[in-house]
Amino acid sequence: MYFTRAICRTRPLVRTTNVLRSFATNTATNPAWKLGILNHVAIAVPDIDKSAGFYKNVMGAKVSDKVALPEHGVYTVFVELGNTKIELLHPYGDKSPIENFLKKKPDGGIHHVCIEVDDIYAAMKDLKEKKVRALDPEPKIGAHGKPVVFLHPKDCGGVLVELEQR
Image (cartoon, rainbow, N blue to C red):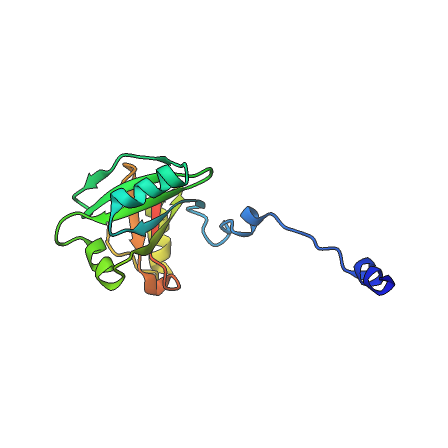
């Protein structure tokens, strides 16, 4: 018992840092734009109604109506969480990028993460200079009615990253 107490007394004090601060954009390297909050995590699902029902009826979350976005080839449903959202994605049409995703992963899975930026055009220019490729040369209007652009997963550690104008 005394030995245990001695160990406890000699343990170093653990200091925590502000997690949000540790992920903040360094304005010295990105003076023209700033990285914002995580807007949502998108999940490709084989049955959007079943998935929406799970979050609404089992988890008790607030769930949006299903919305078709033909220009993106998807149906979307947003699940509201306390500080972010989950976007459920389901194919719309034969040429949907989600259709290809579900062929590889029939049960679905995480498709992308969306991070807000304060100036999407400045971010795109800066990232291009840093050899980070965008999937499209210009932003498109996304599910929230704001400009969005997707960054190539090979340039982002294997993750498909969506930037959305704040």
